[in-house]
Image (cartoon, helix red, strand yellow):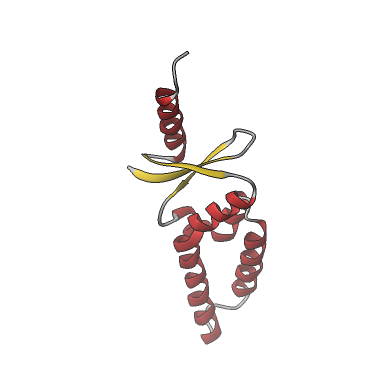
Length: 122
């Protein structure tokens, strides 16, 4: 089981953000950022990665760029989920709860079930 923070937009849409390391952020960096609506970060990462990818790997500069790209992807893995939380808050989402679940959809289901159980019966 993983810990997820549950965020809710005023329109009622809910998002679950896993706590800790972001595997999708690590493996897919710029693409992951764009999919998660982290537009500025995604574009900057994409430009950097494309620029660094143009350097031939066989050169000393190529080995350095490979190391720099690895560091970029590690930084995305370490900070990805906190960047996502900050982005959700900036878009009007409010942190409501933290729950344990196997995946984001399960976390939202646990949150909704807990909310229904705690609501007063009419």
